[in-house]
Image (cartoon, rainbow, N blue to C red; front, side, top):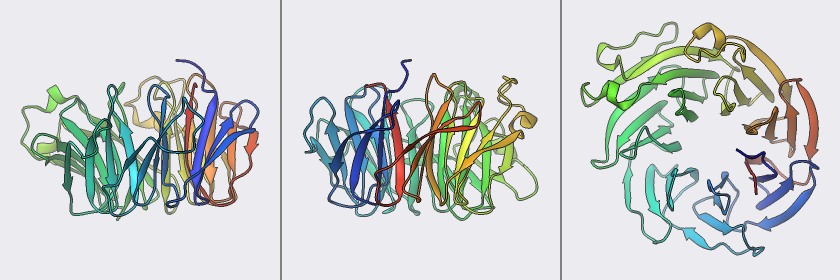
Length: 336
């Protein structure tokens, strides 16, 4: 994997901003007139940029300098909270606070599939294989959906939180990490599909407040690793390092915390995740953070209008990216 060169950011000032990661200087700014920005996301090949707003999703061709989008999704009726690109092909998944999700082929206007849930969605990604979608929502549950039937096939629930702000699914180690308004980060193993194929259709795994009791029918589906107290209230975003051995989280108290023992490669060992340091802090809420692949760097974005570049190994602040006029809510990086 090549070292990232370009940073993109978006937020409440209705602008998409591109930055040179090495110099922290702006490359260009593109207006996003329709709303504030919830998420910016590069396609896997770096050719497209997806921007999620309220309620539109716009796509920009980065091979040109035009400010016009090349494709628009006008399907949702509220904030589009998350978008995920599929590993191959022009396929994406979107979810929204309107309680709907959509599966898309960017070559056509209408969704391939769509359905509604009972709760507003906060995050979405493709699952263990092409037959699954995983979501989190404001009920405090992460759900695995069977695409063919549009039915829920698995659920990870916590009693601690009324809202999940998001999750990470790391395929190399099958780590499933979710977080939200409780201030906790929950790290679990989502077992490979072959290991859970013989189980009942629906499985629920509940993290209790003081224990990790797993109902019998959920064993072999989700398996707890640990539960971390990151802050008193909201954990807004999290990121895993290349090897999946270090976890960073962005909090409402302004702190950016790192978890994990980089010298212990056992990702399923509970005690290794209990090692924690504070990398640094913003003056206000931290909305996003992301490890930069193949480097010792991490970027973060905040309500203080700043984007910061850190050396996480030395715990040093290296650069400030200044230019946004309001809260910065989302970041992504690209080798382009």
